[in-house]
Length: 406
Ligand SMILES: Cc1ncc(COP(=O)(O)O)c(C=O)c1O
Image (tube, rainbow, N blue to C red; front, side, top):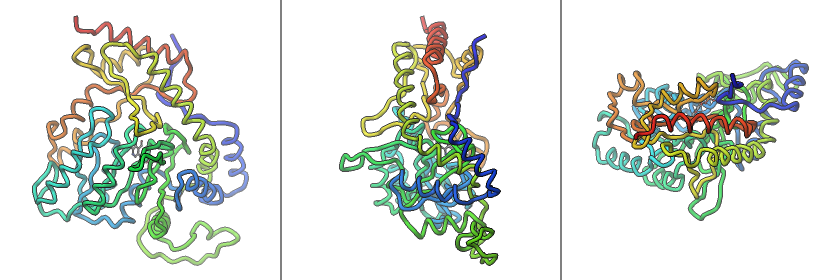
């Protein structure tokens, strides 16, 4: 039997091991100098003023919505083709996620559809999942699916026109780039009120678990920092250090979302390698595309001209006009060949909670509903070898050929 090709694999070097060991030996395991360093370096890398290191991207999204003042009964636009976190944070406030369908080409939130929904809501019409009596649209959380930017230019236009806060779910984007309205390349996340990044184990850079909230607004940064640590005012992490004092004040009922130094010690080193990881992923993506090109029956992911993909995910699509295989059978064949794979995502409107709570129907979001039955995420990471890429391609080719319509 061939060796297992895992779906994802973190790239951890001696530097990460050295600094985690130093952290453990220092006796300071919670938020401290490594977390501060990670924040400074991350803000610089993203070209932003402030970065707040947190326990996850979910925590960052939660704190971002709290900081922009989301209230019960308000609406937040969210793509249906995303992970649980993007919408659950809206529900934490008893606010309402307004789901938006995706583009067939790049699987990102369809901004024309978002505009259509905003227009209908502003006219007082209902849209799927939203009953009358709501308190208006507060924010939009675009997700840069797999690491390819949404149409940021159009998204910014909508934010301006409808006075929306822009909280970007950049879980897949460290780094990714988009072209702004002047045709200049910019970091994905740089135009948001708050951009939220993930360092979960499968992400482009990792701390095992972790996240970062990035903003240019000092008041938002301060609020997130305070709320990330029990609503305790000012530099609470210093309380037990030499510079600190025992004294603290609680100014709001906050959360416990700070990043420990054990994780940040990994993060500072991963960040130094982010550009190299990015180049390596791009190369692996190009090799996968070359190896899979010409297999009639699947569609390969694209990189739009106005976006530089992070290649966090490499998602292929079964063309059901040519090939009769189901998505699940293709995954089973990959598993039998000892190759890991996944599905990103079951759209939110197809999950029991969202169906029961908001009465969504598959036909409310036809593109995501169709895509769900056709998409498979293949392994992609800097250390994926040429032999492994060839094995993945051979397995897909022979399987898809066996199910071709005659
Ligand atoms: C699109 C998206 N948003 C948010 C998250 C949540 O990230 P975390 O696990 O760091 O909370 C993920 C995690 O996979 C994700 O894929």
